[in-house]
Length: 152
Image (cartoon, rainbow, N blue to C red; front, side):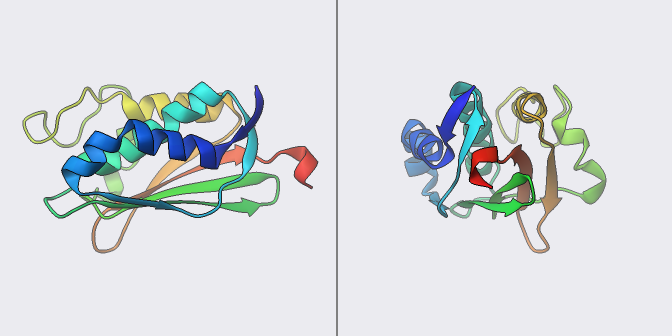
């Protein structure tokens, strides 16, 4: 684990997803993001899965995705907010289980492992991850990440 600039990770993910972003006419924005103690490759996987899902699971209109982080006591609370398809409140926990898919493979490609991988990585770093359906459309995936103790 080392000091990792989460904003640089998001920039790299956006570069890696450039083709998907362009094809979907997606708009990905972010606020200033913190430096945290992390395994950079794993943090990259988290943002790659979350932003990739937000691009993939949209209902025909161009996806808009926004990433932000807010300091709460000893953790950062990251949010990935999108305007894609929504999810029923009773299914928000299920989507983090491996091979659990709510849309069918005919509707959207994928194996149903991305959010399970995110959960494992976030928990390995001492955090928690959850989803909050948005009132009109889309969802917000939030996860906590320990704040760098040197930032106190």
